[in-house]
Image 1: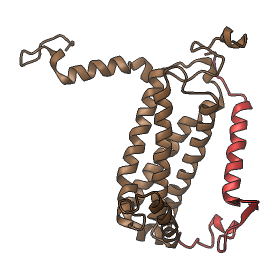
Image 2 (image 1 turned 90 degrees about the vertical axis):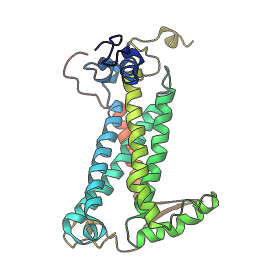
Image 3 (image 1 turned 90 degrees about the horizontal axis):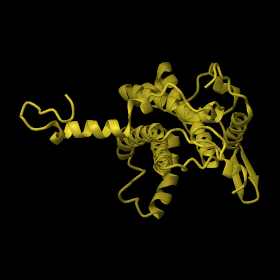
Image 4 (image 1 turned 180 degrees about the vertical axis):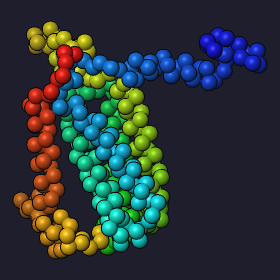
Length: 223
Length: 58
């Protein structure tokens, strides 16, 4: 049904919120931008692969996290498969941050907020901060002495920030729920938004190169 | 963390003891964290300078 075609109630489809949402979504994210088959020549560099490496690690983090959530602490502490999946969750998190920091360095020195990409940069920064919170709560819910030690040390820092009464790192239940529900949802939503913005605005060109991949003459002249 | 099994790769590094730290003035960082940061810097530099394989002209 086209945007102006009346629906079964006789009302024009343009007054229908699903039609308006579809029209706005298609305008903001045309399919050829969402799933492009070609990229500018400057994207052919290793520095451009760390974003997708970060997402790949994030997928493993989510999958291994869901796996250990199904069976629980006794399983991941005592069975060999549990040890393996627990380690998979830890090391995929290590790789997630490893790749994300290199991605951050690359985009920082590229000034990747240029060309109406400020929101892309900001969503990346906030996703990074939310990821730190997610990892931190993960260390708090290992259910071992390491987790107790980290919680005991961290409580003073959290209290000094004035939020300890509400966000109690000694409360394993609260930290577990933040770790497995709230924070992954925040990180996941921010990652989706970040990728959509990258698709909508395009991959940022190197400094001194125009969006079409040609060198900027003003930059070369030092202007 | 649970005790590593005797056949695991963790036996390569003795983890049953206090960690090793670098002390330099007021700076203090564990060797593990320092190695990870150095690895990140190395991978970052390699990513900047290693040629990217291109199958066809873009």
